[in-house]
Each structure stands twice: as C-alpha cells, then as structure tokens.
Image 1 (tube, rainbow over the protein chains, first blue to last red):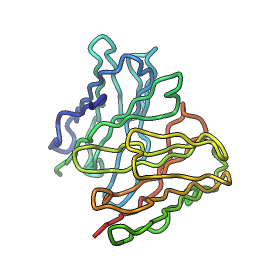
Image 2: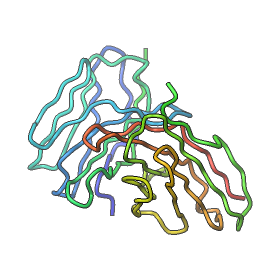
Image 3: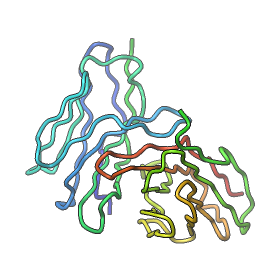
Image 4: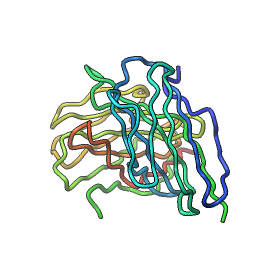
Length: 114
Length: 112
C-alpha cells in the first residue's frame, strides 16, 4: 500500500526549460511534505518543504505546489540545469504517533540535457 | 561535512550470518532513522529512535533490530541475513521532524 506515489519513473528535460515532478498521496493525515534530491552513491539531500497550511513555497529555482483537495504536490525547477540531473524523492509526514516518520515515494529520475 | 557517518560503506555477507551496520552522528540530534532503498520502492523506514534507548518499528522492521545506547550511535542489526535484505541502507538524523532529515552516504549490503 504505497501512500506516496511518484508515477513517473523518469523525466527528460532540455537545459533552461522547466522541470515538473509530480507526487500523489493517499493519507489525508499527512501535513508536511518534503522533496529530496539524490545523486548516485550519495545520501538524499533535503531540497524544499511545504506545510499543509500553505499551497506554495519557493526557494530560488525550486517551487513546490500543494493541492490538498487533490492530494497532489509538484516540484517545479526553473530554469533546469544539467547539475539538476538526479533522482528526486517526495516525502510526507503526519502528526500524532507518526510524528517525524517520513514516507517516501519511489523516486523520479530527472535528466537535464545540455 | 561529516555530521553523520555510516560504516561500513560496502559489505558482502553470507546468508544466515549476523550483520551490524553503524550510524554515528556528531550533531547531537535527538531523532535517528534507518531506511532501506530498493528499486521501485523508494526509501522505506526500518526502525527509528527518538532518544537514547527509545526506539520503534517502521514499516519494514521484520528481520531487523536496533539499539541506541548513546545519543551519537544508532546500530542496525540483521540477526540472520537473507538475500531479500540485499539493499542500500541509509541512516538519517533530525533535530526536529519539522526540519527534515540529514542522510548519511549509505551502506551497500549484499547477502549471497
């Protein structure tokens, strides 16, 4: 039972264009969402997060959008750069006894072509 | 930036043998986690700790145990390794769950 899903295993984008990575979730108790980026042979690194009280959060080239009614979030990277090529994981957490435990999606491999 | 280190980085072991992976942090963070990464599954939580001697199970805890006798160390033990436990294991630390995790570089474990 995958509570967080990234339905696109891979995405290929031209340098300078927008990359949009999508994530869907099923657990309505999730109230905090994060995106992580992972290079080969390294651990994931935190990219950006959003609380359920917001619908948008920006950090430089990265923007995360949250649509609670659709249980959907997306990560926009503008403009995309070759160094952005990596695996991107979305993750979610809930309060209560689940506090602090992140549930991850399967990941999307982003390739940015020069 | 060390902060969090995992050892060993790579290990090959035989089916049925016990294996212990170590996670060491220098950040004095309260929360520590063990995840495994497998193709098609992303990262799945094995066990986590919210303080010394305080641990709890994650979604894929069968066949694994953990111990945290000091703030800085979180050990993951496979009591009797099986081929299904071949995976990449990541440790993570967090000062507060609201700030997200810092991950270690991972341990690639192969059970033959």
